[in-house]
Image 1 (cartoon, helix red, strand yellow):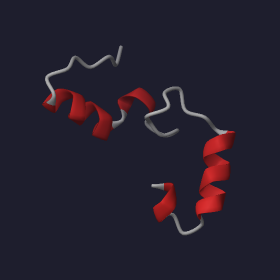
Image 2 (cartoon, one colour):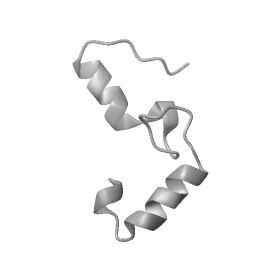
Image 3 (cartoon, helix red, strand yellow):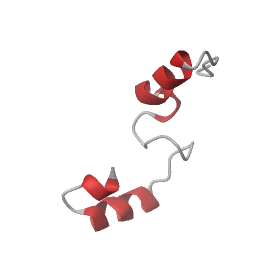
Length: 50
């Protein structure tokens, strides 16, 4: 998504300054990421949202 940002360098700096808990999520959703969780559901995996 950084490549699609209006200012990719600013997006990279923001990402570097506010690392998410999990590398494959954003800083806003974390483990509640709807895209990540839906992918897990469709793959038959358990969600770990406790």
